[in-house]
Length: 212
Image (cartoon, rainbow, N blue to C red):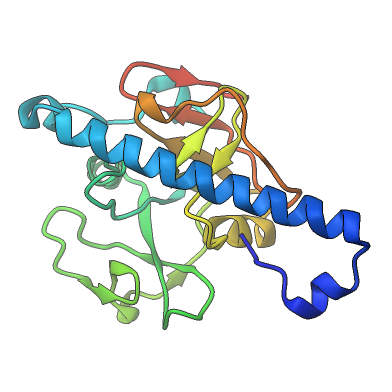
């Protein structure tokens, strides 16, 4: 999420500033709560059970993906729904796969081809974690599998708050975005803003929400 500058706030009526600040506070409070819930859920999972989850996309999701398309995924953190098995499955079945990359912490997110999702020999440390090396080249995926902090059954997504994915999707409006989440990340409502990009579907270990 883009935080308004003091100059931007100064151009609003007082009641508008209050609404914006309240929304910002609600979103960050919910993020803290849902991050902790996600961490607790993953910590309680049996490792053998966790290894069996998210092995390949559901058939209904695969129907959204054109043959040979380039698919953007993510290199998950310890508590995020794992996406690397999806990358291996897709790569093995003739799809191009890619991961987010950053040139520095202030740079916009872009995607680089991931040419070795099995051995990960082309992965280097980036500003926000593992990412493909620069030599792999930049690509524009037609489909994204995205991480999230919380979601609704209508396809609304709450991310980490930096607007990396919302910003990228805003510049690539034809991209199909599919969320990956644990079941505990479902909420009834989310405070949303116009720039929050909706999802075409959400995959959890027990259910597929959508396609919408």
